[in-house]
Length: 377
View 1 (cartoon, rainbow, N blue to C red):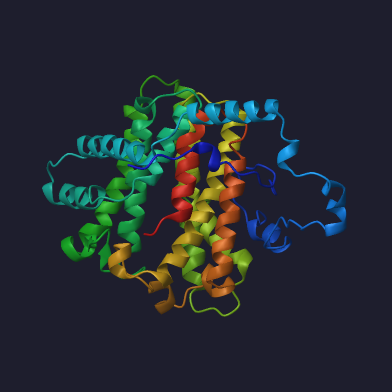
View 2 (view 1 turned 180 degrees about the vertical axis):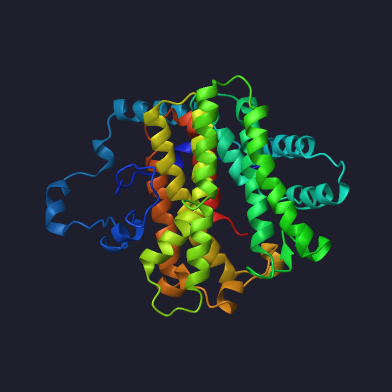
């Protein structure tokens, strides 16, 4: 297990856009990126003449005993600062989520549909969305149990989207999470119904299984969940993505719209729902909304790069399928190097939204942002 020093991960950046619940196409991340030099900050080496007044004595002679003692004290303080074990955190949270999912969707009659639901729901995966939900809840003062029903509901919806996305009428994929896709095992008819059932049950589960939270906050959370998956969220992104296949004039603005809705919306919903259920203030909720929006778009930029740089075995899903389908992607428009630079900028901007929170409590979200930025599958 690797230990991560949080202070090396907190980077300042620029907030380019006003916080808003809307994910309309006017929210252009890349616009700000293209108007800044890639290096962002350049450090110029001073001319030799500018250093002439130091020539009569060495730098070491300028360090007093007091400076040395101060440096040692700072080093000791640095050693005493808490370190966050991200690997252990993810293992523990994923274990809790997996157990909760197993308990929520039991194998019962009609057995076939529940087998299909469980097949995809319990097939593994990184559980990024439910962990984001729990981490956001804990950041604003809630606890894991408060957010667990919502976290499971979000994962159910995510799984539904994967089942439907893999269907022959959509992406026609044979592999998901290293296993045959749902329709390859159960048939297209059962796969469609399994997705439908997971979607319906997700709303039931968050409504009836969330405890210790006021009805008003539960209703607000359900509203966020509905918006993240409907025609202002995932569905909107899917439709525009489908209609853009094979087009030669798809630009960055349209691509951003697709991914802010198709991918980022559910990640945003996960974080915002966790913050609402955890008792977060309006200001905290909106800061976390912006954090998640940056992270969500970054997730897709990284995904686009991995699709053309990794094998199917490494990804656990079919590699290069966007290229085959002639879909527009960030590497296609920007190239791999610029896409990676854009992802790093989004990561910095995301973490800037957490600057007003306790850094110890924000550690899981900071670590998750870095994990998404540097993931290899």
